[in-house]
Image (tube, rainbow, N blue to C red; front, side, top):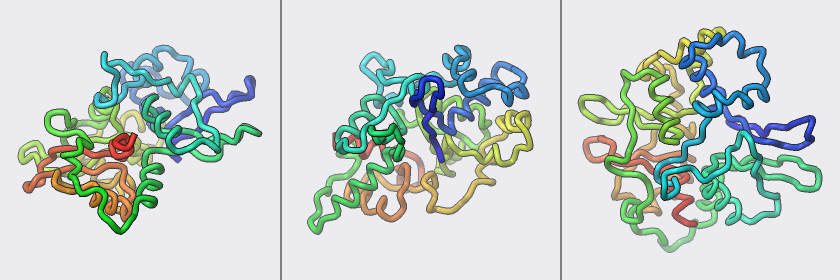
Length: 284
């Protein structure tokens, strides 16, 4: 489970969302500040989310540049201090616009009669619905994803290198508001893999909190060698070219349920990234 709604027993209501990446970012804070990570075990979630030092740095919301406001600032709500949701009877258009306009990654679906959270939907969930409902005989999407302006290309693409430490890469992802980054060979510029911000491989290898913080110094090549290689995982590496059509991408998603496609050229060099968010945003 990548995200969980936060319930305040005193207020008797949901007050925010906590994600896997939040916990990873808190570990980054302890490493950056040199704080005693052993104290983390005794701190409540409420205490951590009330810590202005943490909120204003590693948990500060940075939207992807492509979806930032005109002045470059985030216009969305902070999901650590507010709880945005949709009722179970809301239409898909409402859910999509709320996700997009508030630059959210997770959207709780509520049953208003008793305040139950029925599900938490993501762009990948919505894309899966779109794909299953747009599968018609006639080809509707013959234009290429590049011509349609779906995705990020050229110098706007953020990449990482195998020699970089996990701490460096996580900082880059947070700074740019990205959930994952293509990893390329420093010499050939060819794609080596993709690293997700929510990857907990470094945590599974840790024996305690100090070990977890220490593992932030591991390099990507070490971590990627420990990753699962099952191509059915949403964050596995999937590639396409700028010549592929929207129809192809939809059919490919129906098979693999990816979170993103890395666009490469004939030499397997990265030229762009197309996320589930980009695909959903195209229809808004």
